[in-house]
Image (cartoon, rainbow, N blue to C red; front, side):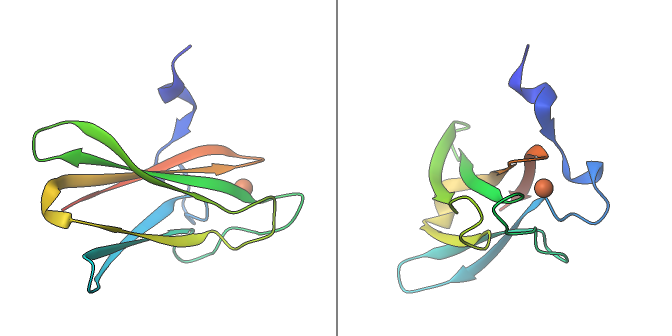
Length: 112
Ligand SMILES: [Fe+2]
């Protein structure tokens, strides 16, 4: 049983409320990577139905797949949005995974 068979790609869901949207902006430290689960419709945040975590990975310029960071939202206690700051020039692409307690793992990627 491979993990990949349980990961839902963005095209799996039309309204995209589970897909971790990846947005970039700049700051004094570097490039801010903001992840929000659900771009147009933010995922529910209740004790019964919520996003527990987001993990962000990067493909380095050398072709390695590395973990960049993790955001934890509790169990319905925080809206599923958060940011990390990276050195953008070190990566070719970013991938985010989100985990809904009812609907599983979703992914999205952004070429840099
Ligand atoms: Fe869900």
